[in-house]
Amino acid sequence: MPDIRHRVGIAAPRHRVYETLATKEGLTDFWTAHVEGDSVVGRTLSFFFTSPNPAAVMEVVELSPEERVQWRCVEGPPEWVGTTVTFALKDTAGETVVLFTHADWREPIEFMHHCSTRWATFLIGLRSGLEGGAFTAFPDDTKVSSSWR
Image (cartoon, rainbow, N blue to C red; front, side, top):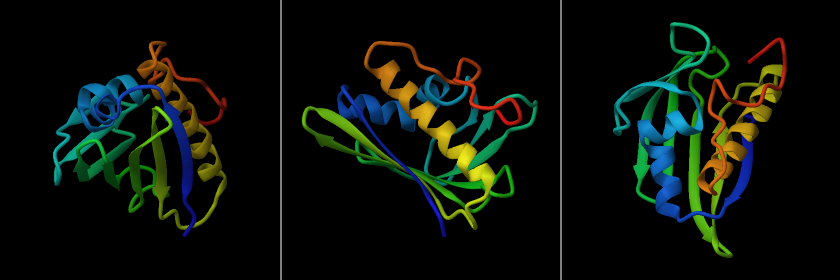
């Protein structure tokens, strides 16, 4: 099965990167301004973008402090349901490296290409926000297409 993979180095302590990815408050800075649910293993987080319904609902699979955050998509685009999203963290040369994987896509369709670009822009926004610039969570995110958000 194909995966989306990205690597981003962030000049911020690993605990700050982890807290941004592992908490509802941090996720509203990083991904979308509207997040509901509980960031607790076994519970779900709902992510809202343009609709009153969640665009994706993720079960929290793993929260290993300063090491790893992992979700499994349980509701959302059919191509996402059953996929996993993982943020693995490590220290390298004075920065925190985020190894991002959106795994288990059934096939590399055009929507996967779009999502890869979107994930990359959100990860660059994560770096920007944690390094003292601006976060670029939805709705202040970088637009990559007029046909898909």
